[in-house]
Amino acid sequence: MNAFVLALLMLTLRAKVYGVPSAPAPLAWFEPRSIIPCADKGGGYLVVGRYVYDPSNPFSDQGDIFMLRLDTSLNVLWLKTVGSSPSREVGLQAIQLTEADSGYFVCGASLSGGTVHPIYIRTNPQGDVLWSREYPSFWISERPTLMSREPGTSNVVIAGARNIGFQWYAALLWLDMTTGNPIVEHDYAAPNVHLLGVSIARAPQSGEIYMSGVYSDNVYQNSVFLARFTRTGEPTWAIACTTTLFLDPVSIRALNDSTFYVLVNRGSVPSDAQIWKFRNSTPLWYQGFLSFTGNEAYLFSNGNLIVCGNGPDQMRHAWIALGPVGGFAWSCYYADFYSVNTEYAMCESPQGVLTSVGASNSVGIGDLDCSVIQIPANNGHYPGCIIPAGFSTSSPEYAWINLGLTDLSSPYPYTALTLQSVQIAPQVDSLCRSLYEETQETGRPPRPSVQALCSSEGIVFLSAEDTDIAIYRPNGALAYRGELKCGRQTITLGQGVYLWRAGGCAGKAVVR
Image 1 (cartoon, one colour):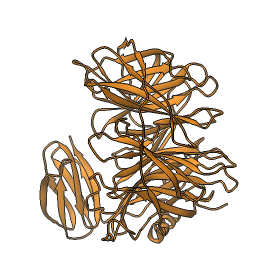
Image 2 (cartoon, helix red, strand yellow):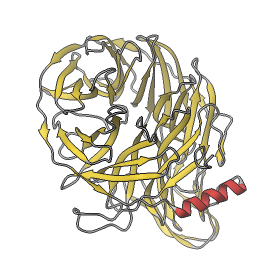
Image 3 (cartoon, one colour):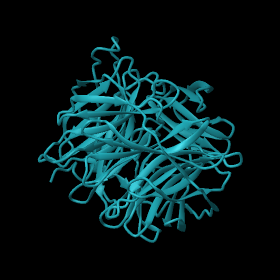
């Protein structure tokens, strides 16, 4: 068996920029957002995300959608970028239409203008754009769980929001994936509150729709609402969480017995992830995880709910598996040799293997690279992975109120959008492969030249050389600049989150 099928494969994707912008960038920024298994004869996976051609400014609104097709052994088959001019798009989620017609329906977000709104792309099996549509006034989140296919049809439903009369309405939009034409839109309002639909899931048998989203009123800002709808969009119940804590709804997954799971993050980054389990509108249990930020929850065929994200120091690929009644089934994180590691999304292979996609900061090779990792979903064990006793947990409790939703159905036109795909020649990172092989031989990853430890006084650096160092606050303000001596050195800083770069390494540190 290929050693990478059950282990780590990093892909550094370098690209020469064709067309616009005219100035090619020596390094690229690849930020994957979701991964799906492909049902055609060849099998494999499709990864979609955001490609930034100027990594010196990755947090601007520039960028293209990228589509990366892998075979079953995670070898690259093709890589395409899709964008307009100027390009301000990000790929979020994809659906393969049918096994016979193995083209793709890709949902992305346009970052142009004041409202993040959806764009939809239909491609052939090779990733070439057949048509594209844009819905300028329909707000969507940048989550990889914002749409769900309607079983037995070519229709898809997308969660989002509309601003109607200075009030935000949660919304569900039905589209035909073969044409991109809208079928119906439902907008849901509650008195004197703002609702933003973020993530949806369908019950596998009944087709009922569950939604999680952001709830705000004059008292509670950035809390969570949950709602259930019939398969055609009529609301059956809706509840809102009455807490003054900042809660960020991330993902929702539904079962057949009127139960569902909700993944939320509490507080700003670095945040603490929480899993809630409900039956209808009644909470069954809550489980919190300290020093772990969740990005997606996924229900596997073995009964486990697996959450991927960042932990334990917000800079490691990490996974937590829960059993049906809560509690740890297993947890692990990869002690990577790169300084920034984020797990964005995952899926299940036909063989029941967890296939997870994330991003790694490989200094000197690419500013942000796409990484695909496969591990057994029943225990999480694979070489180079650390199995902790368990992430620290908490047991939050919340109060809920009922929301009376008013359902509006209004037609909104789409706008034609001209997008084109460009073939890019990817390159598998040979340095990463050699580092991976070294990890296999020694049982631990190689040590970076600069490491950071946190203390109450500041940040303790362990450096293998004399080098320059710069430390920034999250808003980009410079907190410290100087020379780092070989050995151990403490830099005194006040409480807060800091980003640092030194000796070809970079990372994040928290002073408490």
